[in-house]
Length: 297
Length: 129
Image 1 (cartoon, chains in turn blue, brown):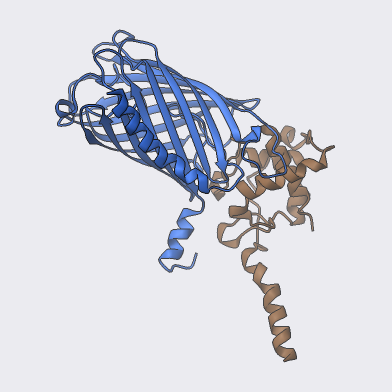
Image 2: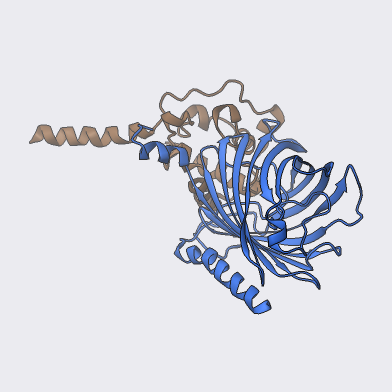
């Protein structure tokens, strides 16, 4: 089972790492977090293509899995970012399934930078119960023990909102996310969750030369996230919580690699959750599309 | 032949003008508070760091302001070579890079470390014609 898991991870990670070999030196600035959102929005007109995986190593009674997802993040305006996710999941000794899609929108409430910068987040999810990417954890967390055949026929139509509070203080970013989610397909009440993150770039001055491994190209941090039950059963009882160090490496002007080896803090989690992500930014996407269709930009 | 030569010369001069924004008008409401205007660049005594600022400028600003900082008419972005930009204090430019101006499509670059934003200010000063 472990061998199958390693094979799955090797193939997927190879697909992510291959484009890196084609990159030129230099750097882009991306948040290193996988779960926690900051107030930094996508630049207007730019499109980020993100390929990520959430890999769960099993505890007894669980199976190892790889949950890949594709994220398209577009800067609609300087204060509004919209994202579409497509996600799947492959469980060792079980099957591979498409688990659904999500569409999220983030709106920065204040035009200027403040001590605390609030952002409103609204997401619609059309997923099935086999979803394992765990972009956030609400309620008790996902079912990590049942087989895909049992989980995937159950569809969830969910509306999720977040209040994102984020501060930049002496090059540290400190962000807090408070989550409310309502699943319209099942009577689960309103579910709650949280995510907190702290990060900092390793180098605060940019060197004059192009370099792959300069300190300025790396950001380090940590995030904590988990579920807080629901209106039917509020609290920490039977909920999943993770602590995860995060590292991002700006590989080139427009691409970033991120890694996060998370540790499950409760019995409802995977003992280890490894996340890997690769982001490629297409600058001026709107203008490029306009040119493609012959419109004078 | 001479006429063709002058024509080519004129075309060469005209080419960059398409990418510039000579009609740039600053947003009168986009004003840094007095305290921010008065801030001095902590890197002012280290002009060699403008090279890093150039790298950051190419990465983050060229898309809208152009490689020479002359702005783009289609994006309503500022011509950073203009005296009305160069006359602004270091603190004002830093504040504008930090906060952006969402109304005009200028994003906030507060995601960059503070010193890197000051490096960009150093580089903008080198764009003075």
